[in-house]
Image 1 (tube, rainbow, N blue to C red):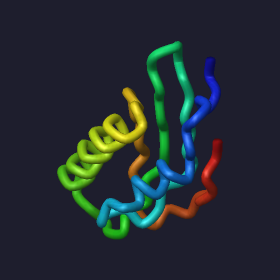
Image 2 (tube, helix red, strand yellow):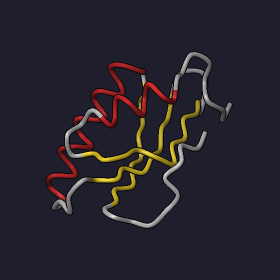
Image 3 (cartoon, rainbow, N blue to C red):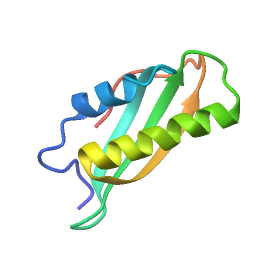
Image 4 (cartoon, rainbow, N blue to C red):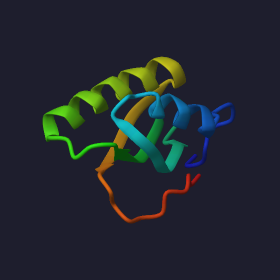
Amino acid sequence: MQFTPKGIELDSIVSSIEEEPEIKNAHHLHVWKLDDNHIHLEAHLDFLDDVVLSVSNRVMDRLEKKLHDSFDIEHTTFQCEYERDDNKEIVN
């Protein structure tokens, strides 16, 4: 079950995430189905600015709703980053 579900376009998800004005880049993205009905996502979010936690929480709340409404993603785990030197590739 733990594979990217058919019909999920990772590029579309990344584009949707990167529409958020605070987000510079979304990378290290994984999408999988835990069972027949639940799609999960984890991703690193590279912020444009060194924001406080309350701002990152608001961004994550918006993203959770957007990803649920647009892609039926029911659970998200985000790693928030700022100027972190890590691999910026999208990983499936």
